[in-house]
Length: 168
Image (cartoon, rainbow, N blue to C red; front, side):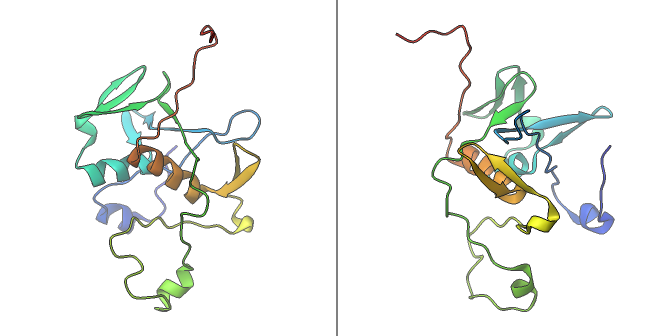
């Protein structure tokens, strides 16, 4: 099902997206579903919603196929289940963390968030949202979505090559 935890927040939002991802059988998160169909409604990943907002697109601008989705001149490759591979390359150390308590108390440098994309999430192991990613590393879920957004923003898409392709 779909759970909307904070009704007032949802009702005041211009856009919403889900934060689900499905690890592969080995427990590694390599991809995210761009879309989920639930009760005849199409929901989008939060990273895709953010990318669309930044680029001035809407769901109705999408041309969805079994190979991916096209927005204007941008093709986002995905498999037939709408899963986009996440490119984690060069993302190490690029995300700045600011404690939410520090934000609430005003203990951060002025201009910290100006002109930036801000994602709010937990990095606390107790929340149980630390997931394995390729390369024997682990990341909090919020950084997985940041990496997905970065993949789209920088158009650093990964394609899975069919097992029938042979390289010489």
